[in-house]
Image 1 (cartoon, rainbow, N blue to C red):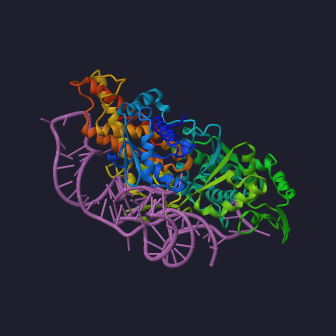
Image 2: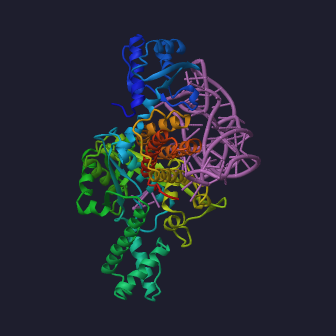
Image 3: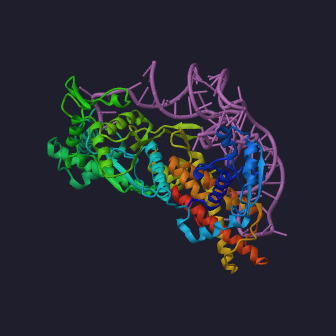
Length: 553
RNA sequence: GUCCUGAUAGCUCAGCCGGAUAGAGCAUACGCCUUCUAAGCGUACGGUCGGGGGUUCGAAUCCCUUUCAGGACGCCA
């Protein structure tokens, strides 16, 4: 049972033809490539199978193609015509009504259309954002959030069992810094001359929290620099910062199943056993008064310190424990979506899990490259230190969730990305997100008008033979394939490309084919069904990238 | 210096497990609203796929080399 009925059928008859013509004894159906040619004069579908076989069979591709065609069961494959073209392509012109049957499927499945059981039974944990709760998210985080959330949605649609996870770094030095920064700002609010710590966080967000704290507790900790005060500022700061992140992500349409606290690794005693395991397996050694992980055994450039000379752990230790914990929770694969500045971290993390006895490919790390904000062709700087930078919050407020999410996933994450503020903010045809949403709104409008005119959806589609209708039908039919492709390649931008293409085909269809027409109810009702199916498909696809599908614009 | 990403149309990018004349959006030019939303459609213009080698019937795609750009190379997190 393959995902796309038409293509599965073509693959099957192709394979049968190979066997009957004695070209092959058997052939893996799944490895046959079926494509939709760019130029429809090259058929509805095509295959390069004959060319693929030249290497194995050492025969001329056209000769192979001829042999296949002679033994092709055209009836079973619902093929009207097959041609051999170019260097040896097989071009199939298929029965139009078999293409149109996709409408029935879409209308039956509604918001489940596009879903498949391709990844059934495979458990993934996807970790993304995982920004420290010490300040506002930056653009890289937002990109990771949009990409990670979209990927999770896509993989779930492809049938994978996905857990979305955020690792909260609430235990290291940076939290100490947060506490002392907040203490300083608080005391400054109280009117004292209190210096910020050397590596303190100077962002305005810390000041805001200090003001809020003072409104609640008054001068309770004024002038105090003791354990109790420190603890208070640490915990309170953490809470405020984390809450801000949670609210922001939620407003951005990004959700998580698990918020995993670094502190819990200590509280639940996961650190020591992890270290013990590494030691007992012989992957550590002591040198220069520190404990080292021999990560060079597993393709890392150098060994890594686990316990520093002062007896404290490096960041790596809890991170190893965390990944071990994730693996022990029974996921088949872990995916970390990290910023480009963490790429040096990949090898040591992979080395760590290998040292613990897991295959390196259990952990897959996707790197998210930097984002530059551009306005009027010039870069807009975003800095954590200075207060006047553009925050993710203001970006969302100004340009809208839909546009921001659409833009962030529209390009592969591992490419450098210029975010064009002028384009994202423009409410015009320059903005690609509107192009797609407009197509959806148009469909909604047509369906509304048809309802007023009492035109019902047809259940048979033999009149849909116009070139624009066929094109649209073929691409609707591709949706499940696209979702599976995007999921397996972990490339959400494939959905964006798809959505663009469907919108384009629809707009083109709209221009040539009048849908609501009471003088031709039969054709009208069949076209209406096509519009309804397209609308469902487009909405489902947009949902995979967290972009809304408006009924009206 | 080592490693990771990139380099494709004027701009931003797809395509990259080798396949038909290299695609899209934006920009530019010209057409299309008495007819379902013109935030739309159509046509045109636009490319030594960074350079140079190699493998192949066939290379933007694979291999080698080189140039340029961004990033990472801590007993920070």
